Length: 174
Image 1 (cartoon, rainbow, N blue to C red):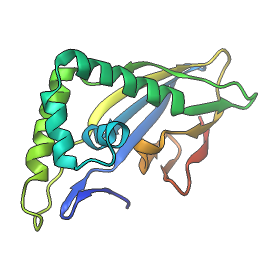
Image 2 (cartoon, helix red, strand yellow; image 1 turned 90 degrees about the horizontal axis):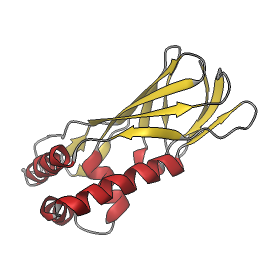
Image 3 (cartoon, one colour; image 1 turned 30 degrees about the horizontal axis):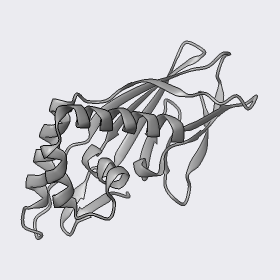
Image 4 (tube, one colour; image 1 turned 180 degrees about the horizontal axis):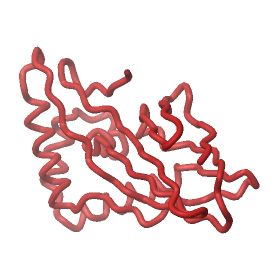
């Protein structure tokens, strides 16, 4: 099973997604994401991970809030959901953790990152929820998620699979 590596000996839970259809035209996406690593990939991928975490912890509330908004926008723009008629369905109503909770997770990630390399530790993934609202009934879609989320384990009622950089999209039946 693929998993992300933060640095030698420190692994992250793999990102995961549960997809459920509510009625015939609404789809709920319940993600469990390693947000410190995703924020690092989005905002400063070339920087040292510990230095990045320290900078995030020190951010003023308004700047951290702006980053949360930017992440939701990136997730929305880079998630591709196409129904069988070719209609693109946007993920909306993103519910990311509050900035106070996110800041605490950055602090935990920093502590974990500074632990001895010969021990295995992890930061628990954080819940992120979004919904897709289609104009018509949805029974099959093509799904592609942002690269910063991959690899990601996708769980549906009738199917389970990985989306990776080598397999970035899948056809999903409800």
